[in-house]
Each structure stands twice: as C-alpha cells, then as structure tokens.
Image: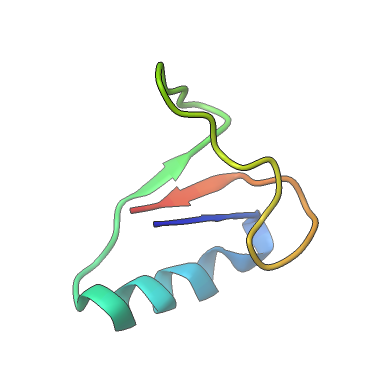
Length: 55
C-alpha cells in the first residue's frame, strides 16, 4: 500500500507491481473517505499532500 501525491503516482504503481506482480487499484483520496482509517497527510516520497492510495 502506498499513499502518494499526483507527481509520484507512477513511481508508486511501479513499486507495487515490482512487489506484488499484479496491477494495483488506484483510489483518489479526494473522492473516497474511510470510516476507520485516515490516510497519511503527506506523500511518502515528498512533503506534498497525499492524493492517491495505491493498493
């Protein structure tokens, strides 16, 4: 699972495919909210606001 900004979404997808050898689901965090989980505020690759969940 990766939480990233728009600029790093391709890198996160590549990392996911390398690790799990299958295509991930990409969830837009501006359109989706979770009842029991709050995503990290910042991208895991930089200090930009997180935008996508790669699972």
